[in-house]
Image (cartoon, rainbow, N blue to C red; front, side, top):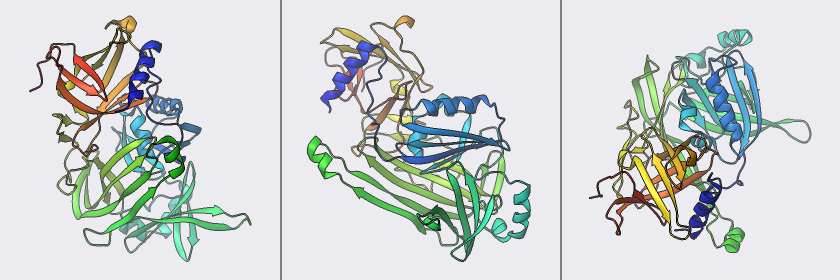
Length: 431
């Protein structure tokens, strides 16, 4: 438990808007990200809100915009990866969109009421002729090789390039193995291969793995100076878990589908620990058609073709569905004995929370829309749930969620770090 948290909450009460309660740092590894949304009009209101939310994030820099052929694109620099950025966007802003692709440095979106699969930019007239002459991988690959912008020979292999907000990315699909290559210009003006990664293997048997990472970096100097653990860890990889299945996405049925599961975790001294488990569905001749986010500790094979009605039972007494623990919905009061000031958190069932200082009146309500959620999966290895309080300014409180009855009043309470929030709406005591 951190004593600093009490001091931060005191600052939050005194200045009304809790901008000081920021547990994510402003420094760290910078990632060049690309976000694209296909099938929209230039003045789409939903995308405008998404864009403004991203621009308001303090960890986002150098935002560039483009729009062509009903595809809106954003390129930006962010102190984290794509999953972390998406997690910091308010739920109400994200609601109109569905993720079709999310990688370390890329998010592809489509409108939930759209049937378009946004795995790559829409082909133009010039691309159509190239598609005809390079049709084999278009028909036989599980990656989207039918829409591309350029063709290039790299290392004796034919690659199809997709122009994104952060440059051209090249893909080759041969014998069921999809390679992704990026190029750089060196100091002598020559084009060199910057990196080549395997992004999909469809030809191997079920159980085939790829994209394995296991990074463990320590900063002993910073650790010694601060007395904290400044280790950065990133571990995970893809596994082929199903072949030749059928699935549905956006009201359309797909046959000859494979499913790849990505499972892993990341630990960062500034952004905390995050666990991931996602099933990706790829249809032959089409590409990515569906993604399902899973509980980290669940069986990804058993979750195939199930809806995202996620349910997790935690040792602290929380039963969570889709990020919401219904038992803590309501009004909670914290009394600071040093300042004799009360503060209130009203957790709503739609994932929005309200914060009040002094009393629950509109005049004492903090500005903006705040969000709360229970993180998916077994983040805390003691089995406790993790609750995120995401303030309107983009600041996030991330704490263990414990339930106990207030010893003074017998009322149910929840504790966030060392702070006890007591029920203020006549909830029954915890059993």
